[in-house]
Amino acid sequence: MESIIGKFKTDYSLYTKEVLADIQNAKKSLYIGIPKETDYQEKRVPLTPNSVAALVNYGFRVVVEKDAGENSNFSNEEYVQAGADIVYTKEDVFKAETIIKSGPINPAEIRLLQTNQTIFSPILLPNQTKSNFKSLMEKRVTAIAFEYVKGDYNTYPFMRSMSEIAGNYAIIVAAKYLSNDYGKGILLGGIAGQPPAKVLILGAGTVGEAAAKSALALGASVQVFDDNIFRLSRLQKDLGNKIYTSVIDPINLAKNIARSHVVIGALKPKNGKTPCVVTEDMVRSMKKDSVIIDVSIDNGGCFETSQVTNHDEPIFTKHGVIHYCVPNIASNVSRTASYALSNILSPILKNAANAGSLENLIKIDNGILHGTYLYKGALTKDFIAKKFDLKFTDLELLLSADF
Image (cartoon, rainbow, N blue to C red; front, side):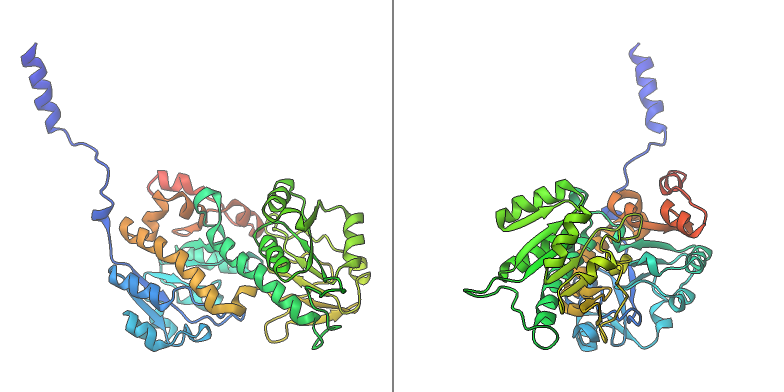
């Protein structure tokens, strides 16, 4: 019996055995390109010089297009000192294996992409076209969207970070346009003997929470409306009885909008589009020189009267109400926003290097997998495929088949 067992052991020792891959041994130096942004008045840069220095020390090669950090007050010299190579054309940047952008990729940049390249950027779906997706698919591109990447505790780190900035900045904008330069000269917090301004916020998500905290800090009276009771309860618990919360009931909403000095639209999109809950009649009922700030304009907006504006001409007036409808509000505080993006991106890129590539990271990181909308040319988000009438392919099936 012992001789038989010994024979089995000997035979077994000769068989090829599966072993877990050693992630550390798979580490690969990544080659990253950062182009200068030209669209959507994008002023952010996805990696700051400090983060570039850390990545270069980790073995990365980073090329940065000349003046890519200029609008966030990062000089070419800072990037050179960090170890990056400065290049003078987009063609040179797009020779990198992985392209990282703070704004969505545009048709001119798509033409510069190489076959099998990886792009990591926002997608800004309302601004995309079927033609853009078809071109990316034809080039067998792998694309990861900031908006869809998941982090710990089922959060969306890129969206949360930019939303916090947008919520805080919305209150700064409100204070500006209530002042004498544009409005009636109203102070958000009021003074002794004079009540504070009334701020109504649509949405109890990250934008709404940040806006509520900032408005309260300035002494404003704050109301928050949302259809999600859990978010309202959480916000009420965090901020106490200082705020009034309500579900979005059209009659109650209309009554309170008419009394408000500021209304901030910060509702979450549903299937890529923000619910439009404020009618033109509601806007018409508002006080003269009151202010609407539609943070949700990136996905269609919360107000019937909203029209996309820009950082150069940010406002228009309709029915006596000042409208601020600038997409990508965070870009107006681009240096802070760049640091926020960079702090999220750097650990992801180090993990990608340890895995051997961003494509390999998709296979082992569920958060990055969730952010992937194109994998080697296959469109892997069903809602995008339906929106643009394109073929959908299940990403997990692709990965299980070792596509």
